[in-house]
Amino acid sequence: MENSKIGVVLIYGAGLGSFVWDSVKPQLDFPVLTIEFPNRGAGDTANDTLSFNDYRNAALDQIERWGYKRFVIVTHSIGGCIGLSLMDLLSDKVAGFVGIGAAIPRHGGSFISSLPFPQRIVMPLVMKFFGTKPPQKSIAYEYCNDLNAEQSTEILRCFTAEAKGLYTGKVFYEKTAVKSLYVKLTNDNSFPLPLQDKMANTLGAEVTSLATGHLPMVSNPTALAKIFNEFFAGVFSGK
Image 1 (tube, rainbow, N blue to C red):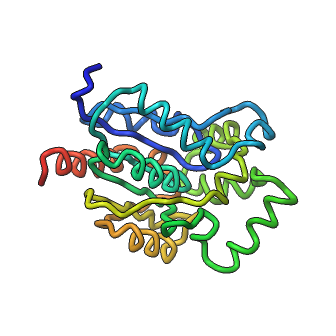
Image 2 (cartoon, rainbow, N blue to C red):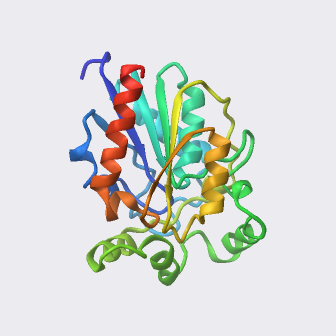
């Protein structure tokens, strides 16, 4: 691949895998890199010792091996934290930023710090005593409320426990002038709308909405791809 090419980097949320983008990728008008977090499907303790920076560095390595000089970073859920950190490190290469129901903590904050009270108090205690993989009923409620049975089964089967450090690691970034977009998910059981409004405001992004649950790339990939293509075209054309 030529280093002069422009493309798109897709970063999913906690517990998932790059498979969630499979129905979106063929519909995109630009080359795509799907970031894969460490140890997918390797068991519920495989990520116990990882830090936030281990996740960030794994993504950074994949981007550097990809070799593209300009790209838009697209993030979902907790992937927003990784994307912000990457944008700070690769500011000369990042042409735009998209958050899809994404966590956007303030500079120096963490995923947990971005949550409303009392979740930001309760979540560290839950992780300490029960780990980072929720019960299947909770995953189904938060992730699968608008998915069909086959899609839900796949999410539940593939869900990977993440490191606690992914949730608690501090995210350092400087706001840049890159064009940004926040896709609000109006039927999201994981990130309620007031929280999404707060995240979009922190990012300082243009806002659009989709009437989906937490995984629009699975439940309505065509609508999401349309939003992406319009945004990417504007970014790469300079409009």
